[in-house]
Image: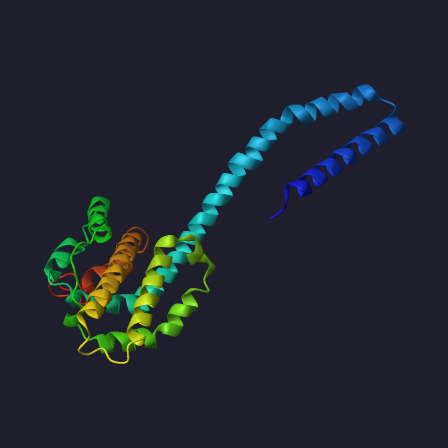
Amino acid sequence: MWRLSTYLILGTLFTVSSVVLYFVHYLIFKDIHHIFIYMVGDLAFLPLEVFIVVVVIERVLSRREKQASHEKLNMVTGAFLSEVGNVLLVDLLNCFPKKNEIRRQLAIRPDWTHADFSKAMDFATGLELSPDCRNIDLDKLKALLIEKRQFLVSLLESPNILEHDRFTDLLWATFHLDEELEARKSLTNLPVEDIKHISVDIKRLYSHLLVEWVVHVEHLKSSYPHLFSLVARTHPFQEHPSAVLSE
């Protein structure tokens, strides 16, 4: 990042260079009238040139860059879901006493519209159902997160996630739950306060996971219908998930 003094020095150098070149032009051709004609013409075109370069071209390039970054982030999200996210969606669902409510709200179907996805997003961001970690195998969850730790760390190397707080929050929630489980030598007969604490960590992770999953699935529906078709058949929030195409 350049300092203000750097810009002032550069501005002064360019201005002096311009004056020197105009002076050389005058010494050669002895035509001050010609110099002022082109100077005024250049100055008259300058506002339009600034508009074209700074506003139009920069906006087009910025939009393309954002689209490319967004596409790369969706690829990272897809890798996360395929590697660990989809397993967590299934396993952690059993923590919630009212898991049928989650299934009902997130039972994505092929005919879902943007309004349906928006409703699912509102439910995911405001998830109020309290989980109970005693309803799942914590040792199995711990083993899964330890197994996938290197993969999760590798995701942090992607520069695209630094610009997307939502996915970063999901990774931090996953790492935190991993650390909480590994910090305990035994996950059986935990004190009540530990159970409550881990349950809150699971709720935080699951809420972030649901949000990212809904966003990703809607993206697949609009951009990759063939991938969305598989998700619509296999996601855990339906009565009988199956990759087999029914007649």
